[in-house]
Picture 1: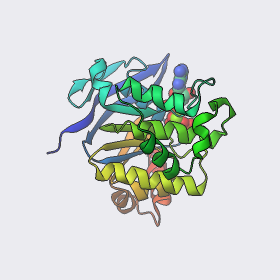
Picture 2 (picture 1 turned 135 degrees about the vertical axis):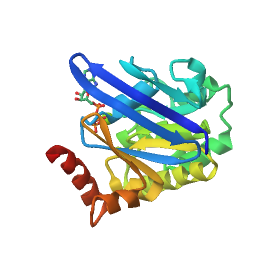
Picture 3 (picture 1 turned 60 degrees about the vertical axis):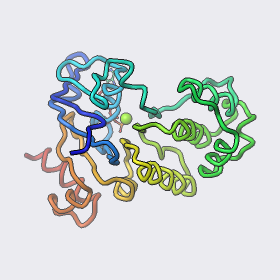
Length: 243
Ligand SMILES: Nc1ncnc2c1ncn2[C@@H]1O[C@H](COP(=O)(O)OP(=O)(O)OP(=O)(O)O)[C@@H](O)[C@H]1O
Ligand SMILES: [Mg+2]
């Protein structure tokens, strides 16, 4: 069996009296692509924050490539793009990419950076502009470029397509498929079920802090008798609402 890139074991997270995650059991095999879906407030971002040790968990444990998630060495193989990505406003695009790669003790190779910007349809002029002058979509592309250029073993993206136009979305999907072909592990949230269907071998449905489904998009359609992935997803969370 492939090594688990990430393992959640009976994870619970409370915010005050509210239980936001409960009994989360999930193995993400190394080299696979996982989509995490759920309605607003389901707990997707909280699950990622727990994984990255940005917040304390109330029960259970999490491992990243076999190392406890709270050990900083566990996170050395990860690149992460948050839901609301805000790079320091005073940096240029080039500075930001340079600093992010320097954290990994890597140099930014000009050719690779230019090729990545082109693949994301981000104008090379953005390298010399301060990020405060970027549009929302340009900022998102800069964050994606930094994550992808760091060539991580595990890529964690919280709504990577947010704010992107159709051309850029197609570019990102191509790049994410390439990451997979290189044997990297991909774990991302999305409200676009068609993107999940296109990119992911596996998906998980999180609803009211519980995992209702883990399997292939095709299996979700099969198990929840949907005509489409969207209908199957609605049936899946509906069965929880009424069950
Ligand atoms: N820092 C916090 N303090 C208190 N409650 C929080 C905090 N962060 C999130 N929550 C609550 O936890 C629940 C899950 O939020 P979370 O951000 O994980 O949802 P999500 O699935 O990522 O939603 P969205 O699709 O809107 O991004 C919500 O009820 C939210 O109000
Ligand atoms: Mg979220």
